[in-house]
Every structure is written in structure tokens, then in C-alpha cells.
Length: 263
Image (cartoon, rainbow, N blue to C red; front, side):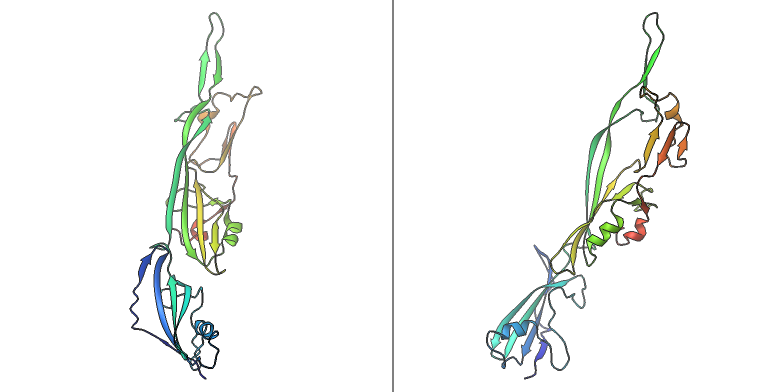
């Protein structure tokens, strides 16, 4: 017997928000199942294919025809008779009202350095009675920003491939209004139930002073010669000078191209 599938377009099931995300339900009526056993009919109703049109009941992971962000998460069949079943396909939408959910974590951590806020070498001088002046570099403790921004997506991108391609890289160009090399891409984490749709989290660590490293010449006793700090250029226009060098230690890529969905 030919199987026929008709969608109930008058089914009163509006788009609604639930604890699991947005939900849309489509209802289909399947007939032509009487030749199957009573135990097999619900299975056939859940995966039926229309004999005339070739239309198939949407399976788990299938996107909604009008809202591709919504995918089938549950399929339920209801017996209406020996030859008739109703099949309900429940689509769940992205947990996030927009294309992604953003979260931001920030704190302050203590760092030790030898320069003040004006980039002057911190030295203290002591002159003992009847002796010569002695100078030494001081250790200054300050709080620096430690921030991470996270973007959460529902997408078909495999997080493993993105992590292998970009984790450990910094932005080579201005990204989201921030200067080059201030964002470090961390490993992308994700999970999937069907191997098609992933809930991915992209994380980036921020360093307002860039992720570059400075190397400074030191004397045998570990002190820094007076005058070197004053020559250090921190705006990126120079990468070396007398007694110091600035080094790019992370590979770079254009985050605007690598992550076009993040704005």
C-alpha cells in the first residue's frame, strides 16, 4: 500500500521559548501503514517517505525549511488508527536570541616590573655618609587586566578543525576595534549529539599591552643599565633599540577572515 504524508498546516503550535531554547513543532499525518505489524507502524511513521512525492519525515538534526537555525531534536508518533499515525517533529532553535551569545570574564592580576606608568626605569639611589652614591633597580608591583571574551554558537563547524587551525594565534590586524596582537585565540570547545550540529565556544584572551615580549639587556649582577627603559618604544612603531628588543612570539592571522561571524 502506498504511504501518504500530509502536513497539518493549521496545527496550532506557535514558536515558543522553553528552558531548552526556542521550539517549533510540525505535525504530519501518515497513512498507508496497515500492511505493517502493529509494533512496526510507529517506527515506519517516524521515518516514512511519501510514495508519490518522495517527501520524507524530517529526521533528527534536519534544519527547519524556513528557520535553518532550528533543527529537529525529537520525533514522536501518535496512533490514530490501524492505518493512520500523527508524527510530531519538534525543532529546537539556537539557545541564543541572536546569532551568538557573548560572555566576558575579567579580573586584575598582580605583575612585577621595573618601570613606572610613564615607562621610566624605577631606580632608587642611596648615598651613605662619606661614601659614593649607589643605585639599584626596584621591583614595582601593579595590577594588570586579565580578560577573556567568549562567543557561544550553535553551528555545523567542527571545533576540532578550528582549534587546530587557529588556537595559539593572535590577531594580525585590528579586530573588533582592538589593535593587532592584543587578542590570543584559545582552544575552541564544542559538543555535539548528532555529529552535525555543535554548540561551540570560541574564547580569546586579551592583553592590552599586546602579546609581544620585550627582552632587555642586563648587567652581570642582573641590573638594567640606566637609560635603556627611556628608549623603549611601546606603541609598536619600533621593534628594537639600544639594549632592548620587542619580539612577536605568537603566530598571527587575520581574525576578521578567520572568524567572520564574530563582530
